[in-house]
Amino acid sequence: MIIKVKVKTNSKNNDIIKEDDFYKVNIKSQPENNKANIELIKLLTRYFKKKARIINGFKSREKLLSLEP
View 1 (tube, rainbow, N blue to C red):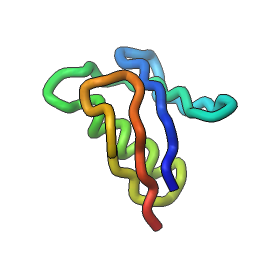
View 2: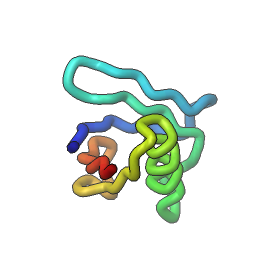
View 3: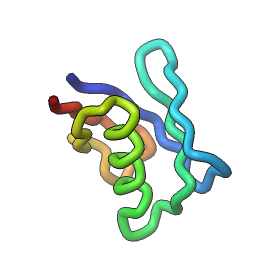
């Protein structure tokens, strides 16, 4: 399953908000040294209970992620 995610870094809390065709994800981490991407993957893996992997948008706020069983 592939999902579209819009990420906001440096937030107070880690949150996942479902919109129409994408997810808004607030991350506490800063976008340095891949910290925000690592935290995003951990957060989405716990949320969906499936392994998450970034397909596209490693350095962008808008990302495509693959969820594997």
